[in-house]
Length: 114
Length: 109
Image (cartoon, rainbow over all chains, first blue to last red; front, side):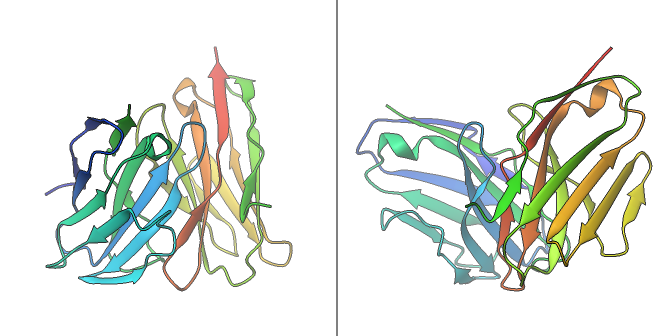
Protein backbone atom coordinates (compact mmCIF):
# COMPACT_ATOMS: atom_id res chain seq x y z
CA UNK A 1 0.00 0.00 0.00
CA UNK A 2 0.89 3.64 -0.09
CA UNK A 3 1.53 3.92 3.63
CA UNK A 4 1.86 1.94 6.84
CA UNK A 5 -1.50 0.56 7.85
CA UNK A 6 -2.40 -0.29 11.44
CA UNK A 7 -5.52 -1.91 12.83
CA UNK A 8 -7.59 -1.54 14.82
CA UNK A 9 -7.45 2.24 15.09
CA UNK A 10 -8.92 2.09 18.60
CA UNK A 11 -9.15 -0.80 21.04
CA UNK A 12 -10.81 -0.92 24.45
CA UNK A 13 -9.87 -3.99 26.46
CA UNK A 14 -10.93 -5.16 29.87
CA UNK A 15 -8.07 -5.74 32.27
CA UNK A 16 -6.80 -9.28 31.84
CA UNK A 17 -7.91 -9.56 28.22
CA UNK A 18 -5.46 -10.46 25.43
CA UNK A 19 -5.15 -8.09 22.47
CA UNK A 20 -3.51 -8.31 19.05
CA UNK A 21 -2.44 -5.24 17.08
CA UNK A 22 -1.67 -5.48 13.41
CA UNK A 23 0.77 -3.58 11.23
CA UNK A 24 1.00 -3.75 7.45
CA UNK A 25 4.19 -1.92 6.39
CA UNK A 26 5.00 -0.23 3.12
CA UNK A 27 5.63 -2.87 0.48
CA UNK A 28 9.33 -3.65 0.16
CA UNK A 29 10.31 -2.05 3.46
CA UNK A 30 12.77 -4.40 5.11
CA UNK A 31 12.75 -2.88 8.59
CA UNK A 32 9.73 -2.72 10.89
CA UNK A 33 9.57 -1.13 14.32
CA UNK A 34 7.04 -1.02 17.15
CA UNK A 35 6.89 1.92 19.53
CA UNK A 36 4.70 2.75 22.52
CA UNK A 37 3.69 6.36 23.12
CA UNK A 38 2.15 7.57 26.36
CA UNK A 39 0.38 10.92 26.51
CA UNK A 40 2.81 13.83 26.57
CA UNK A 41 5.86 11.69 25.91
CA UNK A 42 7.88 10.69 22.90
CA UNK A 43 7.56 7.22 21.37
CA UNK A 44 9.41 4.51 23.32
CA UNK A 45 11.10 1.69 21.41
CA UNK A 46 9.61 -1.76 21.82
CA UNK A 47 11.05 -4.04 19.14
CA UNK A 48 12.63 -4.15 15.66
CA UNK A 49 12.45 -6.60 12.76
CA UNK A 50 14.59 -6.91 9.70
CA UNK A 51 12.52 -9.03 7.34
CA UNK A 52 11.23 -11.87 9.54
CA UNK A 53 14.08 -11.73 12.05
CA UNK A 54 13.43 -9.98 15.34
CA UNK A 55 16.78 -8.26 15.87
CA UNK A 56 16.01 -6.31 19.02
CA UNK A 57 13.25 -6.81 21.56
CA UNK A 58 14.92 -5.01 24.42
CA UNK A 59 12.11 -2.49 24.75
CA UNK A 60 9.29 -4.94 25.39
CA UNK A 61 8.18 -4.06 28.93
CA UNK A 62 7.38 -7.59 30.10
CA UNK A 63 6.93 -11.15 28.92
CA UNK A 64 3.27 -10.30 28.38
CA UNK A 65 4.34 -8.51 25.20
CA UNK A 66 5.16 -10.54 22.11
CA UNK A 67 5.73 -9.51 18.50
CA UNK A 68 6.10 -11.50 15.32
CA UNK A 69 6.57 -10.96 11.60
CA UNK A 70 6.51 -14.52 10.25
CA UNK A 71 6.71 -13.79 6.51
CA UNK A 72 8.68 -10.59 6.67
CA UNK A 73 5.76 -8.31 5.86
CA UNK A 74 2.75 -7.98 8.21
CA UNK A 75 3.58 -7.85 11.91
CA UNK A 76 1.45 -8.47 14.98
CA UNK A 77 2.07 -7.12 18.47
CA UNK A 78 0.31 -9.22 21.08
CA UNK A 79 -0.28 -8.18 24.67
CA UNK A 80 -1.46 -10.86 27.05
CA UNK A 81 -3.39 -10.23 30.27
CA UNK A 82 -3.57 -6.47 29.64
CA UNK A 83 -3.01 -4.09 32.55
CA UNK A 84 -4.06 -0.46 32.92
CA UNK A 85 -0.46 0.69 32.48
CA UNK A 86 -0.54 -0.81 28.97
CA UNK A 87 -2.92 1.98 27.90
CA UNK A 88 -1.06 3.97 25.25
CA UNK A 89 -0.80 4.51 21.52
CA UNK A 90 1.10 1.72 19.78
CA UNK A 91 2.90 2.96 16.69
CA UNK A 92 4.32 0.84 13.93
CA UNK A 93 6.92 2.21 11.54
CA UNK A 94 8.72 0.83 8.54
CA UNK A 95 11.88 1.83 6.77
CA UNK A 96 13.69 0.95 3.57
CA UNK A 97 16.79 -0.26 5.38
CA UNK A 98 17.52 0.22 9.06
CA UNK A 99 18.43 3.46 10.62
CA UNK A 100 19.68 5.82 7.96
CA UNK A 101 16.52 6.70 6.10
CA UNK A 102 14.06 7.70 8.79
CA UNK A 103 10.75 5.99 9.41
CA UNK A 104 7.26 6.14 8.02
CA UNK A 105 4.78 5.66 10.83
CA UNK A 106 1.29 4.25 10.74
CA UNK A 107 -1.59 6.10 12.39
CA UNK A 108 -1.24 3.94 15.50
CA UNK A 109 -3.58 1.90 17.63
CA UNK A 110 -4.92 3.68 20.71
CA UNK A 111 -5.30 1.01 23.40
CA UNK A 112 -7.35 1.75 26.49
CA UNK A 113 -7.45 -0.86 29.24
CA UNK A 114 -10.38 -0.49 31.61
CA UNK B 1 18.79 10.99 32.73
CA UNK B 2 17.04 10.33 29.43
CA UNK B 3 19.12 9.38 26.39
CA UNK B 4 17.62 12.21 24.34
CA UNK B 5 16.62 15.43 26.09
CA UNK B 6 14.59 18.32 24.74
CA UNK B 7 13.19 21.46 26.27
CA UNK B 8 9.45 20.63 26.40
CA UNK B 9 8.40 24.25 25.94
CA UNK B 10 5.81 25.30 25.10
CA UNK B 11 7.21 27.88 22.74
CA UNK B 12 4.59 30.48 21.87
CA UNK B 13 5.71 32.75 19.05
CA UNK B 14 4.02 35.22 16.67
CA UNK B 15 3.76 34.53 12.97
CA UNK B 16 6.95 35.48 11.18
CA UNK B 17 9.19 34.86 14.17
CA UNK B 18 12.35 32.77 14.14
CA UNK B 19 12.46 29.99 16.72
CA UNK B 20 15.14 27.46 17.63
CA UNK B 21 14.87 24.10 19.37
CA UNK B 22 17.73 22.26 20.99
CA UNK B 23 18.30 18.61 21.75
CA UNK B 24 21.11 16.77 23.53
CA UNK B 25 21.89 13.07 23.42
CA UNK B 26 24.00 10.91 25.67
CA UNK B 27 25.04 7.96 23.46
CA UNK B 28 28.28 8.90 21.73
CA UNK B 29 27.85 5.89 19.40
CA UNK B 30 24.79 7.49 17.81
CA UNK B 31 25.06 7.59 14.03
CA UNK B 32 21.95 9.07 12.48
CA UNK B 33 19.90 12.05 13.56
CA UNK B 34 16.47 13.30 12.60
CA UNK B 35 13.75 15.78 13.42
CA UNK B 36 10.14 14.59 13.28
CA UNK B 37 6.99 16.63 13.54
CA UNK B 38 3.92 15.36 15.37
CA UNK B 39 0.52 17.03 15.21
CA UNK B 40 -1.98 16.52 18.02
CA UNK B 41 -3.32 12.92 18.05
CA UNK B 42 -1.46 12.09 14.85
CA UNK B 43 1.58 9.97 14.10
CA UNK B 44 5.09 11.46 13.91
CA UNK B 45 6.21 12.45 10.42
CA UNK B 46 9.80 12.79 9.27
CA UNK B 47 10.70 16.46 8.90
CA UNK B 48 14.37 16.22 8.02
CA UNK B 49 17.59 14.34 8.59
CA UNK B 50 20.43 16.12 10.35
CA UNK B 51 23.96 16.05 8.98
CA UNK B 52 27.25 17.15 10.49
CA UNK B 53 27.66 19.79 7.82
CA UNK B 54 24.25 21.23 8.64
CA UNK B 55 21.38 21.16 6.21
CA UNK B 56 18.53 23.37 5.14
CA UNK B 57 15.07 22.68 3.74
CA UNK B 58 13.21 25.86 2.95
CA UNK B 59 12.56 27.69 6.21
CA UNK B 60 14.04 24.86 8.29
CA UNK B 61 17.72 24.49 9.19
CA UNK B 62 19.16 21.59 11.18
CA UNK B 63 22.59 21.44 12.78
CA UNK B 64 24.55 18.66 14.45
CA UNK B 65 27.48 19.09 16.81
CA UNK B 66 28.94 15.64 17.49
CA UNK B 67 31.57 16.91 19.91
CA UNK B 68 28.92 18.46 22.16
CA UNK B 69 26.31 15.77 21.32
CA UNK B 70 23.85 18.49 20.44
CA UNK B 71 21.28 18.91 17.66
CA UNK B 72 19.29 21.98 16.76
CA UNK B 73 16.38 22.95 14.56
CA UNK B 74 15.80 26.52 13.41
CA UNK B 75 12.50 27.62 11.90
CA UNK B 76 12.45 30.98 10.13
CA UNK B 77 9.36 33.04 9.23
CA UNK B 78 7.07 30.86 11.36
CA UNK B 79 3.65 29.99 9.92
CA UNK B 80 0.48 29.09 11.80
CA UNK B 81 0.79 25.64 10.23
CA UNK B 82 4.14 25.09 11.95
CA UNK B 83 2.30 24.63 15.27
CA UNK B 84 3.10 21.08 16.36
CA UNK B 85 5.39 19.05 18.60
CA UNK B 86 8.92 18.61 17.27
CA UNK B 87 10.67 15.35 18.17
CA UNK B 88 14.43 14.91 18.16
CA UNK B 89 15.51 11.38 17.16
CA UNK B 90 18.87 9.65 17.53
CA UNK B 91 19.70 6.27 15.99
CA UNK B 92 22.51 3.83 16.68
CA UNK B 93 23.95 1.41 14.12
CA UNK B 94 21.98 -1.34 15.84
CA UNK B 95 18.89 0.08 14.17
CA UNK B 96 17.16 1.36 17.28
CA UNK B 97 15.95 4.96 17.29
CA UNK B 98 15.47 6.88 20.52
CA UNK B 99 12.99 9.75 20.57
CA UNK B 100 12.99 12.79 22.80
CA UNK B 101 9.74 13.79 24.47
CA UNK B 102 9.31 16.66 22.06
CA UNK B 103 9.13 20.45 22.09
CA UNK B 104 5.72 22.00 21.58
CA UNK B 105 5.46 25.03 19.31
CA UNK B 106 2.43 27.27 19.00
CA UNK B 107 2.52 29.98 16.36
CA UNK B 108 -0.03 32.72 16.97
CA UNK B 109 -1.45 35.27 14.53
